[in-house]
Length: 122
Ligand SMILES: CC(C)(COP(=O)(O)OP(=O)(O)OC[C@H]1O[C@@H](n2cnc3c(N)ncnc32)[C@H](O)[C@@H]1OP(=O)(O)O)[C@@H](O)C(=O)NCCC(=O)NCCS
Image 1: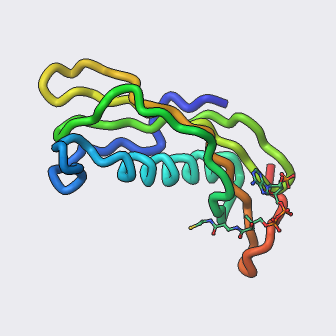
Image 2 (image 1 turned 90 degrees about the horizontal axis):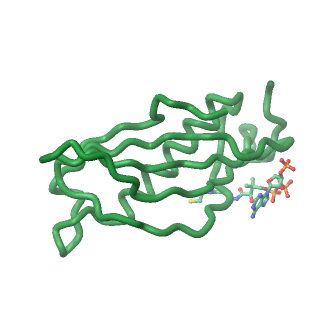
């Protein structure tokens, strides 16, 4: 299922920049990981850990003041694991132009309190 409401929407701040004054890629990666986990929880997972993230390419830079949205879509639901596609779009601060920044498939494992894989509900 594809969600049209973003799992996360964040305005980027000066603290998020790299030495070139664009947004540091690691900040976006962190948000992708969080958004995917939220997407997994929407599908019946309770406690998840990230086990894998596929290759990722950044197509456009993100700037301070941009509002970045993270949309999720379930790619694969296994017994204890779930793969979530996270699509990242940036709404430009000055122009409101909406640009596609990147996307990634992230796999999470649903775990119990002992950190062992547990079947996903639903
Ligand atoms: C995730 C973790 C609990 C899996 O434990 P495990 O004993 O290897 O689990 P299993 O081999 O039984 O696999 C469990 C599920 O994960 C899937 N899986 C395991 N490794 C995978 C990988 N590299 N890529 C994709 N899926 C993977 C399996 O296919 C299985 O899915 P299914 O039940 O839907 O068929 C364990 O590897 C772990 O704790 N890793 C660290 C996670 C973490 O801390 N992440 C944050 C890092 S800071």
